[in-house]
Length: 297
Image 1 (cartoon, rainbow, N blue to C red):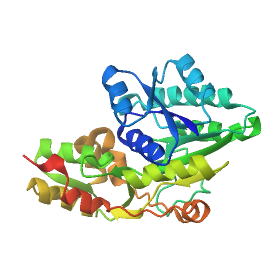
Image 2 (image 1 turned 45 degrees about the vertical axis):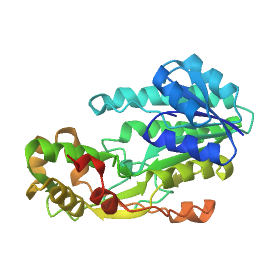
Image 3 (image 1 turned 135 degrees about the vertical axis):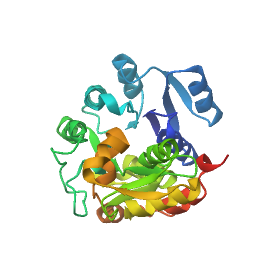
């Protein structure tokens, strides 16, 4: 297949590009800069210049491809609602370009938008009270594309997509701990975050492209890592105290991350593994933290 990938030069997208190329697909990667274009060429992909807000570039990229994987998102959490709307418009254009063709469209969402306090499954709709709720419209829009002749799927990713270089939201926890000289968690720290290695996530996107249809899939390898364990690993690596913060103190200490650090949002990928034959095989989050390069002097 010739696959158009948005976010192709990003942390997850770049791994997806390599996975696709290694599987024998041709990749057309969206790139904004010369450096991004060069990184795509270096791994054997073709370059399509544009960005997430250049809707015509998205339309052209999708129209000339056999399928689309959409991972691009503007990660400015101070403008999350605005960026979620940009994401929704991008999906609308990508889907319209594929309408009536039966070609696949795989879009990205998150498990953090599910109802807290229980193990979320692929069948669960998003929680409208979640800070991540503004992205739910993208999920719904993508899945509605099935009625327009698009083989659409949604891959939900956990708060930590990790490797030894980056760890998703945990990367922000590390930065705050380094700045403030303490590694903190909220309450008793027993609330859980799911996690997945980025190479396992990349493989799932490829399976969803090749085999998925009209469903949500969970890129979850570990259903729930206690946030206290994450904070302990950060404190150990930075050699700083590990302390508890009350829910009332969380926003002051963590800023926008405060809600997420305190939320209990475990998630299962049992249905995904059964339907797509996906089996995560790479290292877990705590192991990657123990070897993370960001702690090195």
